Image (cartoon, rainbow, N blue to C red; front, side, top):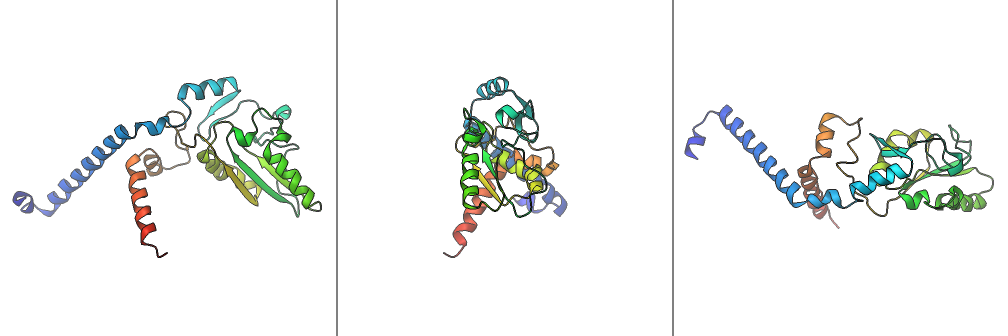
Length: 217
């Protein structure tokens, strides 16, 4: 300690910086070893790939996977992969009200016709209550989609359609996978680094919990 205290300030800063980097690197290694199951809490990779191949999906760098053949009127999907017929117009009809649902196969309505999914049922119910105003409830769900896909759909596509309500229903498997879904290409270098840095998530969690306890009840 005495030797360190006698070093020039520039050397102290250099050694301190190196020590911090090494410490953060060690913490990251420990977290990746002790939390390795985080990447496995969703559907197994092989099951995801089999599902993609069997369901006519293709890889997408933003959403992970999307429909291969669009539009698909038989399945009720338009060119934007919105499961609703007829396709919604842009801009929104005058005096109209428009909502979007996000989620996995539960939202999509796997095994159902498009007009049997809960989004379409909600649209009909709301339209009956407001017959003088156009009501559009649009289904953006797809098997395996979670809150990350919902966020990216909102960021990349949905806001251009002037939504009045967003409904996010991500029931199971709401965990991004490092080997299936990469960071969005729209993210900057620092954001990409933080996306894959588990130490960052732990530090943010600790800080947010600490600030939450400091707030007056």
